Every structure is written in structure tokens, then in C-alpha cells.
Amino acid sequence: MDEREFGRSQQRGSVVGLGTWQLGADWGDVDDKQALAVLEAAAESGVTFFDTADVYGDGRSEQTIAAFLRSRPDLRVLVATKMGRRVEQIPENYVLDNFRAWNDRSRRNLGVDRIDLVQLHCPPTPVYSRDEVYDALDTLVEEGRIAAYGVSVETCAEALTAIARPNVASVQIILNPFRMKPLREVLPAAREAGVGIIARVPLASGLLSGRYTKDTVFPENDHRTFNRHGEAFDQGETFAGVDFATGVEAAAEFAALAPEGCTPAQLAVRWIIQQPGVTTVIPGARSPEQARANAAAGTMPPLPEETLIAIRDLYERRIKDQVEHRW
Image (cartoon, rainbow, N blue to C red; front, side, top):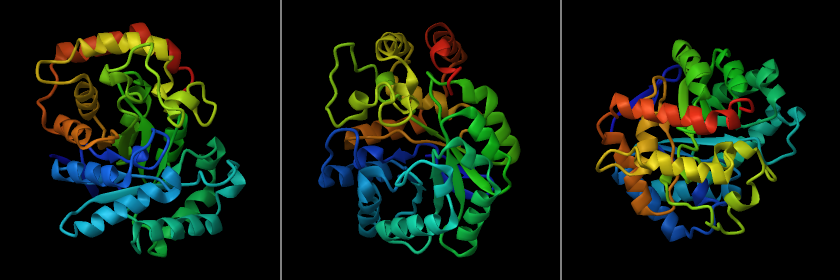
């Protein structure tokens, strides 16, 4: 699989990475054996970028990645984690002492002295504008705790604020065929600045797989049940902010655009890979089969122009008015 560079940090990761929220919590139950099998399937498929966070399963996701990598010392994988969501979400909590404490915990969970990439985990909007926040992150680099840092954002405006900072290596943002605004506002700025783009929620929480109907019921401990209207965290993280009923109908149209030999989920991942400025896309997986299928999108031929036009038309007709004014 191709690898791309996070320009400012000169780190490299596979164009299809693996998001590991599912291996921690909030997506129903995934046992340890299944989680390790997902990581193995991804790695064997050429994935060299794992994305996690300290709050995924209260550290379980980080610990699972560490256990897997200890068992496979032959692998070279860029591991990115996130920090900041373990405390009350007020800007005053984003200070050096807390950063050090959160970093200590993640380094223990991951079993490393230095973490490849640490991202602020969708903090309050004012955090992105504070000089002292970036000074503290620079200190973590100087102390050898982290190799590079980035941010995870909810909105395009937050992304642009972070990109303007000289040492931000990456921006993680929701980007998929149901969330296209970053193509216009964020990706061009990131390319010019040499900032990597990590595209998350690529399947709109599974909507773009085409497997759901309006009658689909998700487990109670799945965010697609308990956060459908933003009850627990930003609504945009669940179904990319699209109303479920609308999303199911639009996803059926999307599925019909998949070329022969390409599943709807692979179509979504392939579409993201082709957007100029994307460094990696991080679909999650609850099974080895899903991990392998997602990774396969990284080696598929480019989508034809007529398919790209049809996907854009679907977004303009069915989705744009629901999401662009919010994120």
C-alpha cells in the first residue's frame, strides 16, 4: 500500500490507516481476542498507521495496540494517540502540567518512551487560538515525550486556526462523501502549509456501507444509539451529523454508484484517498474481514470522473444543507 508523508514532521503512514475507537468502547462489545485479530489483519494488509486516544475504553485501545506491537516487533507502525477528553472541557484545563500527566499515562499504556504523534482531542474552540497551548506542546517535543503533535477538530474554522501554527504536523477532521466542506476550506490550506490531513469518520459511522435501513437498531452502548442528537459529544461524530433517516436513503443512492468489484464502504474510502491533500484515512473495523476490506481500498484503481461527479451531485442534493452550516 502507498504511504504518504506528514509534511512538517516527515513521518509517513499508509494511505489507509486504522481507527481504533471500536477496539476501546462506544461501538458495542469487542473482546480482546477480536481486537488483536483486527490489528493483525490490518497490519498484514499493509496498514502502517494506527489512530487511538486515551479515552477509548479508558486506555484499553492504547493498551491493546501496545500488546499487539510487542507481539510483532518486526512491524513498523506509526501510532497516533489523542489527549484532552479525560477532564472537564474548559480551556483552562489545557495546560502543560495536564499535558505531561496525560502523556505519562498514554506512554505507559502504549509501552513507549516517546509517542509518534499526539493530537489534542477536539478541545473547546478557544484552545486552538492560545499561544500557551502550542508552547506546552513544543515543550513535550523538546522533552522527548512526543515526536510530533497535531489536532483533532470538529469544524473547518478550528482546522484553519491550527494550520496557521508553525509546528502543527497534522489535522484530523471528519471527511467523507457526506462531509465535503473540508475539500474547499481546509485541504488547500493544509497542502500549502505542509500539514498532514487525517480523515476520520470515513463511512459516516457505517452509513456509507449501505448495510443499514431505517429500522436498524444499534446496541445501547453504541454511540449510534446514545449520541444520535449529540447527547454525549459532538453530534457530527455520529453519522457525520446527518439525520439517520435521510442518511439511509442517501446511502442507498451512494451504494448504487460503486463500480464492479467495489463495495460501498470501499467506494467511500477510495473517494477520500483521491482528494488532494489527504495523508491517510482511518476507517475503524470490528472484525478482521472489515479491516482487510478497508485496506483493499488503498490498492484499488482511481475512481472514474463520472463517479466523482455523481457523488458530488448526491451530496449537493441530499446532504449539504444539513451539515455545512454547522461544521
